[in-house]
Length: 333
Ligand SMILES: C[S@@+](CC[C@H](N)C(=O)[O-])C[C@H]1O[C@@H](n2cnc3c(N)ncnc32)[C@H](O)[C@@H]1O
Image 1 (tube, helix red, strand yellow):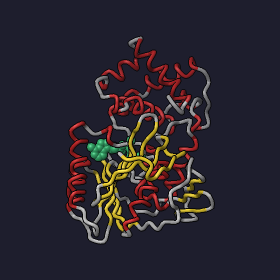
Image 2 (spheres, rainbow, N blue to C red):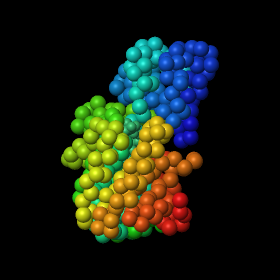
Image 3 (spheres, rainbow, N blue to C red):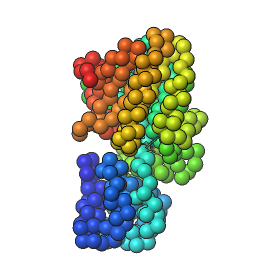
Image 4 (tube, rainbow, N blue to C red):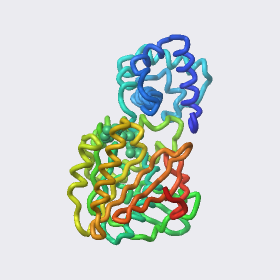
C-alpha cells in the first residue's frame, strides 16, 4: 500500500489468509461483493487501528508506530492479527461494514486555492460541503499556511502548513471571508465526543505520524468552533441548500474524496443538481463547484464558476494533501 509499510504488510498477511480460507476470509466474506471504491481494506485497517488505540489489541500494539511500536517481522505480525481477530471479532465485524470516515485536513492546502479563486467575485463565501465527515475542512480558514514569506490564516493556529506547495502557491495575500459554512454527511463524526476523535484517528494510517499530529493540531484549532455538519444524504441536503441563494454572496459547493462512495446514479444526480443551480446563478449571486477527487495516482482540484460556467483544473495533489502543485489557468476540462 503506497505510503504505509505497515499497512502493506498487514494486507499481505490478510490476503494470504483469505486465499487459505482462514479467519480473515470468514470476516470479509459478507462484504466480498462490495465495490472496490468502498475500500473495504481501509475499513478493516481502521477497525484494527481503533482497537490498538483503545488498548484492546496489545498483541498488535508493538507493531503500531501510532502507539510507540515498530514493524517487527511478518510472522509476529500475523500471530498478532489472528489473535486480535479471535478476541475482537464482533468489533471487526462492525468495522468492515462501516463506511470509510477519513477527515483529512491536509486537503485544505489544495482547497484553499479554490476558495481564494471563488473570492475573486468580491463577495463573502457561503461554503457547503457534501460528505464533510467531522467538518474539519469547513474550517480551512482557521489553519495557518506559510509559503515564500506570505501567510494565510491566524498566526496562532495550532495547525500550520509550512511550504506545502511544490510550486508557486496561490495568492495567499487574498482576502477570503466566510460568511456561512455548513456541511452534510451520511454518518457525521461528532468531534465533541471522545468516540468521534478516536474514530477520526483510527482512519489515519498508523505509521503516518505526521498525519496523526496534523489531525491532533486541527482538533485543537477547531476546539471552540461549533459543529456544522448535518446528518443527511448528499442529494437530500444539497437540493434545498441550493434552492436559497443569497444576493451579494458567492456560494461554493465543495467535496473531497466523496464521489466514489456515491452510487452511479447518485453521482450523476449530484452533478445535475449543481449544474442546474449553476444555470440559475447571476453575477450578484455566483455559484462555484470545487472538487478534490481522484485523478489517477494523484487527486485533482477542479473549479467550475457560474454564471460563466468556466471549468479549470486548479491543482494536483497527493491524496492526503501536501505536496500540492498549484496550476491556475493551465488546463481546462
Ligand atoms: C473518504 S471520506 C472524506 C471526508 C472529507 N470530505 C475529507 O476529505 O476529509 C468520505 C465521506 O463521505 C461520506 N458519504 C458517503 N456517502 C455519502 C452520501 N451519500 N451522502 C453524504 N455523505 C456521504 C462518508 O460518510 C465520509 O464521511
